Length: 302
Image (cartoon, rainbow, N blue to C red; front, side, top):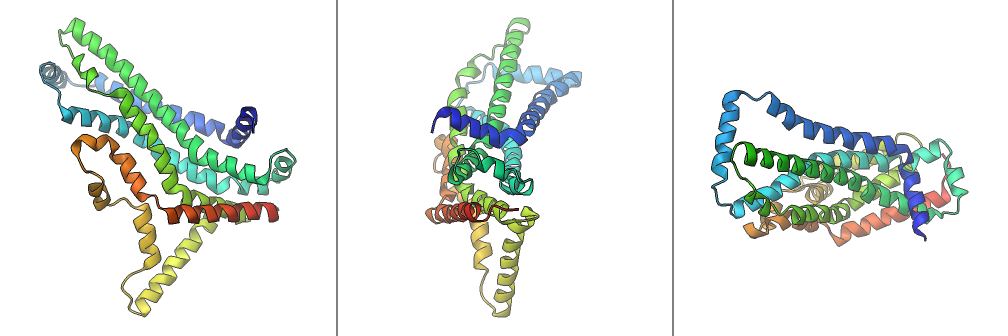
């Protein structure tokens, strides 16, 4: 497979989502950059004086590990709104990626191209699982760079105009290492949600109408039937619902068990996400992907 073929197929998958994947990140970037600037413009005089007093004290304050941890939390927190929106776009993409091409009969055109069904499924999975969140993480990185440039300009103004030097903060910010660790957390994030992505793709391939209902109703029915059985036979708990909650939920116990040392806080997101990944879940996801592929080969009509 050549790079040109790979790029062509990824662009084909993003063709219907190009405006969404461009304008939504741009809007989020604009809001996140404009909000603090607007707040700075409308700030009261006494608040401005208090801010300058705090900055004047900060220039004489020795930075410690607490500030290093704060810098990581600040960088990671900047990515949160982008990743929340990215997850919503991912879920929507997986629900419609195989359904829409059967509904509008474009599947017959794409199948005339020299790309196998297996490759098509793989491209769609790669696009939804990796490319879409990577677009939003790139937007978050751009926002971080803009914030860093504005902070640099602010440091210059404070240093020249107000004799307040904050340059020592930059050495403790660990900008590149924290940014790299945030990007690396994308890998366990994809592995963790792989069974969900595979289930949505199966629903998208199987449904003739309303893929969202086909994805949701079987899960709801199983949970309700299990709840009835547990209540009727006086059993201890619901196994299926508990498994779903345990796998997709991140409890306080999970956070505490992966927070071994304060100095290793920057590794906590990766460790938490990796603790949620299991071989059984990956095997279930692989099985769902095989069923999706089988249906595309044997049942491609709308």
